[in-house]
Length: 507
Image (tube, rainbow, N blue to C red; front, top):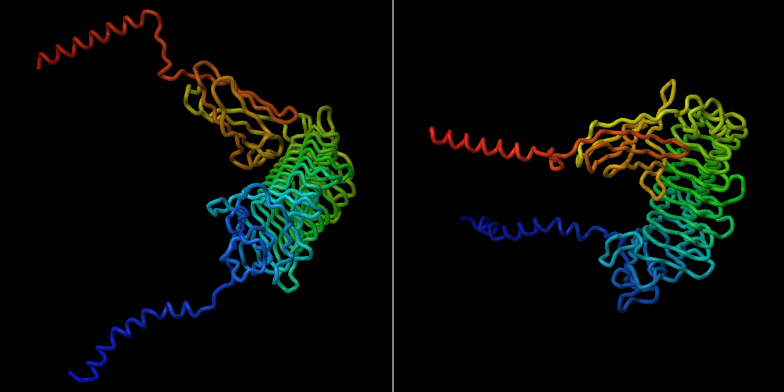
């Protein structure tokens, strides 16, 4: 064997080891991202009570503000529950340098959980705010806020070519001294699963989004009982989408105040599955829109004006369809507005708008509201039903010709104030909800308790009601023999037993 070959065999294990270590060496040599997670826990033993920590990821902060001050771009701040609220006003503009930042409430186990941390500040500043436009994307998730000012007042704006975006979700901002949530961005604003109720300082709004360069999206929010407007969106360059929101019982006194308002928007505006009832002035208000406006599957009842349009002559298209507009002093009002398509709505009676018992359609440009919803058709998947067994009971809302429907179904079906209530005098009714969009079918599951009949009653806004009576067969366990039938049944069983014994003997 040659010496060279022998030396190579001796080096082979070392070469193999180095080869296997190469990926690890490359990984160690790669630059490490500065983004990390910072912990805030006001009840933690030994939490630090100042900013300027050399390693913010290795300590626990007592205050949210100190964690924000020490954060680096891309960081996430976990705010743990504590005994009592965090009594501070958190200024995001103290972060240096500014950059993408996420603040999220977590459980005691460190799992992101809405509502576990409250921030209450007794002074005239918002709990979470910016002093100047913040350079970076910001996410605020899960906080309960209350102050003498707005609960959240944040503006994000990048001086560079990339816009900054703002996300606010799972936030409760009730009973503040100003607006519940204020948001501005040169990029997109997204607000989801938030509450901004009973903000009662004079003329203040629940959710207020303005001066936005991108799109505005507000989903699954409630903004009721405020002294201004529930949801106010203004001066938006992109699109506006508001869906599955409730904005009721707001008491603003200006003609444009009320449930939901959108003004000065350049992109398309879509309002769907929203409820705006009992506002002092307007259920929905729109002004100075350049793009298309579509309102569908909404409920506007008990307002001074259900839907009010002002100066929409520049709008590409204005549609109000598949909604409930009834019980208002005026149903739909328009001033200097493009032609409106208002088909497929329930106006409070079967004879349509501007008739006795129905809401009125007034002003310039409402167009033709024909056809409207005038019929409720009830049916059942099984008739007769069987006690203890589920049966689907359906109600279809329609009108025509041509055929129109309530679409996906208006408003919030499962909230504290559902649009429709379905009951029965026999058993239970569960899971009412719309199906088969766009055919406007509300389906409920009936489970009868006993044989006989079951009346299922639907109650909706302004007389949009219906009933169906089903036969119900008794379940097998409910069978009660007629008098004397027990004797006959016993005799029959005895005879059958004797016949069985006789057959066995023959075998």
